[in-house]
Each structure stands twice: as C-alpha cells, then as structure tokens.
Image 1: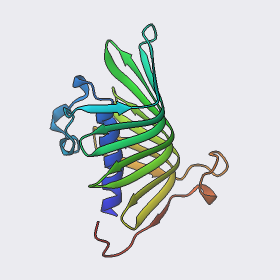
Image 2: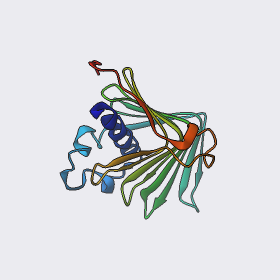
Image 3: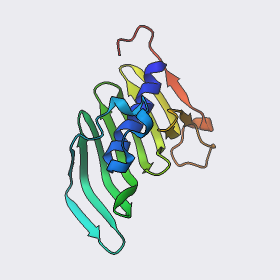
Image 4: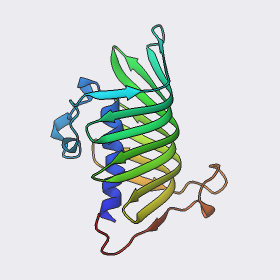
Length: 178
C-alpha cells in the first residue's frame, strides 16, 4: 500500500515540475520535492502550440509529451496560464498518463496543477498502478506542501464512468517486488 501512495506522490512530483517556475521550486526543502530535480530541463513536444500573449497562456495540442528527468506526462492537450511571468496553473486533459520508472503509472481524464497552493488534482477514472498493485477512483488530490494524498471514489452517478457505487477500489499483491 505504501507503494501506491508513492505513486500518488509521483503524480504530484511529476506534474509539479512540469509547470515549474523557479519560484515553485523546492519550498522549504520539502522531502517530497527532493525526489525530483526541479531544475532538470523540461522538454515538451506536441503536434501544435498556440500562445495567447494577451491572455498570457500557452496551449500544446495533439500527442503532447512532457519529459523532465525520468518522469513523463502524456496528454491530448496541456494548457498553461501565467501570472507575472510565472506559471500559475497547468491543465492536462484527455488521456492523461504520468509515468515514473521508480513509482509506476497514474492515469486519468484530466489533471490540474495549481502552482500557488502547490496542489495537484486528477479527475475522471483515476488509476494508479505499480507492478501488480492497482488503485482506482474518480478523483486524486495531492498537496505538495504537506505530502498528503486523497483518492476518492466520487458520488455514484455524478462522474461519468466512475466506479460502481462511487467507491475507491484497490488490489494489492503480497510480496510484490515494486
């Protein structure tokens, strides 16, 4: 079970540096943040990129791949807004996949990284996998400041495609070498 929480943290650690502005770096030496090099180059590729200089936003669309270190995020679209020249919010939508060789894979329909409060919200058919261990829910919230992660099942009927009964589901394999 600890490995699944590590995967949830990896989602947060992966998404956070993807939006990383120098101001969003290693606040207070947070142990969670020390696992990822926030200063590693961020490589983004996509089919198209559109900037709105007046709105201070950028949108990458089509087969978006964002890589920092050994972390990789894939999505149909990534939209970033800025405030005073610094990243404010990063929204990934459509088949969001976050991979880390150390912690596994997190998938969902959408993900939002809010730089100011340093929170990550992943919604829509969230699946966390590491080895044979799997957790499923409708919404994952990770607070990067305190390292807390919550996987919720959602309310039955309120989230299209949510698990039956709106509950969190998990399968853990004993002695699984993660």
